[in-house]
Amino acid sequence: ELSKRSENTMYVSLSYADWLNITLVVQSQDIQDMHHDWAHSASVNGTRLTS
Image 1 (cartoon, rainbow, N blue to C red):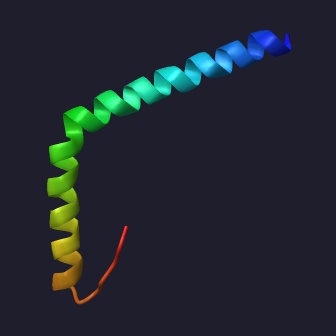
Image 2: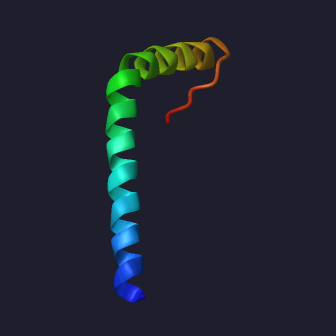
């Protein structure tokens, strides 16, 4: 039971890592643009925020 659970956990973690890598590669430019726009809006509003 325990070894089966740890295998499942490892599989889920690996799948999540793969998904995250793919997502970051695909969306990295969008994220940079979005963060830039958000930071610009925050500074325009007179509020300085850091993520």
